[in-house]
Image (tube, rainbow, N blue to C red; front, side, top):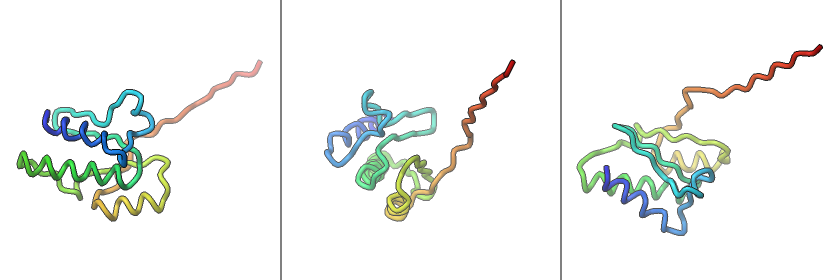
Length: 110
């Protein structure tokens, strides 16, 4: 997994790849857990395509494969046209968050 981390860190020097807006200050583009990988990049085709290429490169080096149709991608605030372009070019599946944040406001009037 250390080699995958190096590959993912290295793609960020490419001027066509952008950090996720909430992760740029900290320079974080991925988190690895036991058998899960979360990658954070801007929701544009060049950034996502570079991540896909990185996963392919890692697969060639390690023999560990992540099939595109098993990779879920989560979008937030991405234009519908761009989202569909990313999905069609990468073969990734759009995931849905398994949770929802709700804000409840209780006001008591006297």
